[in-house]
Every structure is written in C-alpha cells, then in structure tokens.
Image 1 (tube, helix red, strand yellow):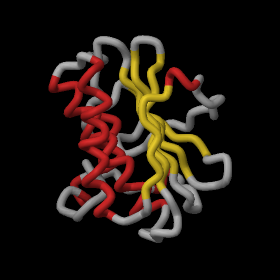
Image 2: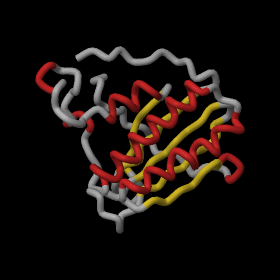
Image 3: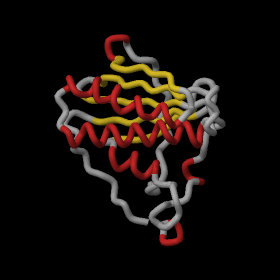
Length: 164
C-alpha cells in the first residue's frame, strides 16, 4: 500500500448505544479543532490508556478532522464534520465523516517521494496510517467520506514502513 493512501473499508452498521463514547458534529471551521482534543482527552482519560497511545489517537484524530474540514467540506461551515469515538471490544474506533464529494486516495501525491518532500501539506493520510493500528475509509451514506481509525487493545501493532 502506498504511504499516503487509506484502504477502502466496508461500511458498518451503527454502534450499539453503550459503545458510543463521543458523538460530535462540528462546523467546518478550523477553530472547532481546538475543542476536539480536550473532548477526546476527557473520553480517553478514564480508559486507562498510556500517554503515548492517547497522543497517537489525538494526532490521528486531529488530522482526520482537519482533512474532513479542509479537503472534504472545502471549509464550508454549512457542511458538518461528524466525529464518533466508539468502544470496539477492548479496542477503540474513531470515525470522521465529511459531506464533500469523496476522494480517491490513490490520486494523492506520495509525500515521501523526493519531489514531494518540500511541498507544504499532504501528510495527513500518512500520519493517520502511522498513528493508528488500522486506518481506512468508506463512502459516506449521503456522499462524502468516512475515515475509520482503529486501535486494538495494547495499541502496539506494527507501524507501516515509511518509505517512498
């Protein structure tokens, strides 16, 4: 798999209510990102995850929400970004949905190739894959894209090789 791509994942049924830890609907304004980390920390704290795992979850979630706002919804505050944090057995799933036109991750430039290394931006998908145990995407029910990030119990799955 290319370093800057996410695999297409099958759509899944909605979570059981007891599995839902956080459900936020955010306007596509970057200022809304400030609230995401504190709300996420409030949910993750009681789970007993170590700080390194919480930091990986926070960074990947921040990137997913920022990508949804900027690239998916084109910063249109009338198009919301939906963030859900769910328990999945002993693991954790984060789903970030936008209401944009969708995207082809294979069309995103590989940020590790020499010609792309100095370009601003373009590393969000790479960071999500590096921080999560599993990272993928699915088409949204009403268009757009749903990014799905997973951390398994223990949170120490092998990280992808970051090579061009």
